[in-house]
Every structure is written in structure tokens, then in C-alpha cells.
Amino acid sequence: MKIVHTSDWQIGRTFSFVDDDALGALQAERLNVIERIGMLARAQGAAHVLVAGDVYEHETPSGHTLRQPMERMRQFADISWHLIPGNHDAHTPQGVWTRLQRDNAVPANVKLHLASAPVELDSAHNAWLLPAVLQRRHTLSDLTAYMDDAPTPEGALRIGVAHGSVVGFGNEGEAQNNPIAIDRAARAGLAYLALGDWHGFNRINDRTVYAGTPEVDRFGTGGNGGGECVVVAFDGPTAPPRLSTHRTGRFTWCKFENVVLTSSADIHALESRVRAIAPEQPHTILAWLEVSGMLGVEDLALYESLIDHRLRSALACLRLSGAPSLAAGADDLDMLGTSGPVRAAAAALLEQVNAGGAEASVAQEALQRLFLLWGEVRRATP
Image (cartoon, rainbow, N blue to C red; front, side, top):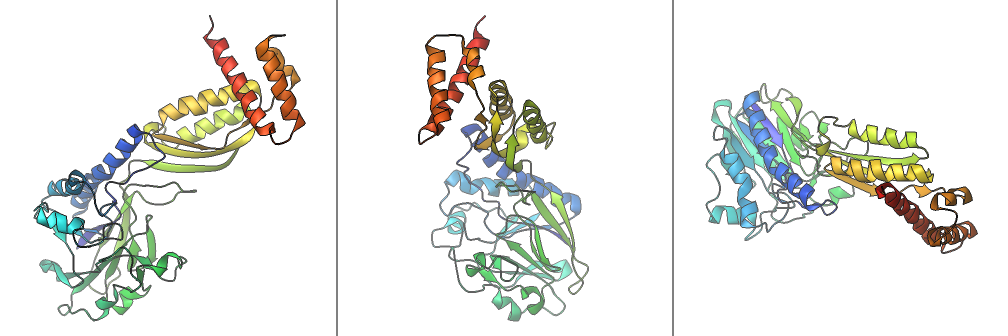
């Protein structure tokens, strides 16, 4: 028997730092990934998909947003989709799950598990699902505790599904809310405990696993996980499950910290490094660059052209923190001519920069913009 384990779809999520075009693409992909999950289940011969909470980002999505994931799952009538509430979409009165039931919007192949009690999952394999159901955003009690004594038939394959924070693997701050015992699988005789809330794949032990979000939704350093689903194969109720992770995400999020630029070579290398993430699909890259350094006038213009203009236009999103500063001296003033108001303004700004003090940084930025604008005018003049 096989299942697909996923979580944290967070349909309707917004991303405040992207423009409208990128926002639309990111939100659409959180729906499109449902189809990739369904195709994965078919390809792997998994009859069931477990979604371990946070199907929705908010407790009060619009009716359109509410129905969209249901319609994507409806397309896979041969797959049973099993959903539980998470902390973002807890089973509250008049919440998303009540609305779905009231509007008769749940397809026959989608099962909403809204009570903490064993449910038969697959009669052919004597498999039973033990869901833990959040009825509020945060709780201080371990909702998986009931699984220890939850009755199932003799020899049953017991599979738990929950949304929360496992206590004792370095996340003590988060585990204060919606805690889950790290040894719950062993204490409850579970063949597998499918978890949601952690957005990257995390194997706590042989039988306790976070699948992570199937479409990455945040920046990280060195790879933050996510963008995957887990296929779980069972050989029996006591045998350790066999896990395999499968890429489902389309977008790649990368953060580059402490990027110091001092030359044109550094600028070209940075552009190449970012594009190398997905050389044939740069429009699937979201990059966050933390930039500093000192550049001459020509190199600063190159930075603005290659990074702030060309690379930004190529990527789904380019987020810049910091910027290289202009390293200008008296000799650079000759670029502005030997006299005239522009040169005079630049000379005054450079003098203020060299003098230091509270206004030096403002003068530095103004001088930088002046040189860049002068360069643009010069290039635009026939």
C-alpha cells in the first residue's frame, strides 16, 4: 500500500514583497501543484493523498478561493484526498470546513476529517486513519494523545495525521502551541505519523515525518526545504515505512547573504550565479540579494543595468537589501564636464561626503544618483 503525504498548501496566501504579476503567478502555482500531486499519486500507484493541515491560508477566504482546490482535486476521481484542519484553517464555527459542507462544495473523492477518531482508510489493506483535529488556531494540549488508546481492528495499519510542532527536536519555542509528542508513533502503535506545519521536509524518526509545503513559499539560505511531497510505502503494520521524496514545486527561492561587490567581474559573477539556479527558466526564480561594497562610477552603472534592471526583469522576483556605494573621487568629476551647474553640484556633494558627519550618507546617495542619471542622459543623447 502507498500514500502520498503533503501539507501546508495555504491556498490564498499573499506575498507583500512581490508585484501584482508575480503575486498572481505564485498564487496560481499553489493551485497548479495540486494537479502535480495527483499525477504523482497516479504514477506511484498511491490511492490516497493525506493533506496534513493548512489547506487554506486564512479562515475566511472568498468563495472562489474556497472552491478552487476542491475543483482541482475533483479532477482526480480515482484518488482519495484526505484533509484535516491546520492552525491557519482550524475547524471553527462558520469556518472554511463548515462553509464547504454547507455549500455542498466537497467532491465525493475528498474526505474532510473533522473529528479526532479512527476512520477506515483502505479496507483492502486494513488501514485506518487517526486524524488529530484543531478546532482553534492554537492549543496547549497534544491532540494526538488520544491515538494511544484509539481502537482499531486487530492487525490494522494505523496511520496518524496531525498539524503541529513536535516537542524535543530544537523547536521548543514553536512547540508551546499545538505540541506533539516526539514518540507518539511508538506509543500509539502507528505505522506512520504524517505531520504538517513545518514547511520543509523533516524526518523526525522512521515513522514521524513532516512533508513540507509542495510549493516553496519563503526564502532561506542553503536551501530551505519545501517544494516536495512524500510517497510512503507500507509493507505491513509493524514494518518501517519506505519513504521517497518527489519534487513538486515550480518556483525556486534563494537568498544570497553578504554579497560584496568591488568590480565589474563581481557584478557579472553575481548575475551568472543567480541565473545558474534555473538557466532555462529564470522566470521561476525568486532571489533575495543582500548587497554591499564600493564601486566606481562605471561599475555602479553596470550594476544598475545588469542587476537592478536586466536581472530583475528576467526573474519572477528580485528582492534587494542594501546596495553598493559609489567610490567617487575628484578625478571622476571630469566625467561631468569641466564646468557647469551639474559639475558644481557634484563637487559640493563630494566635499560633503569627504567631510563626513550626519549628512554624509545623504550626500553620498545624492551623488550616486547624479552620476547614474548623468550616465543615462549621456547614453540617450545621439
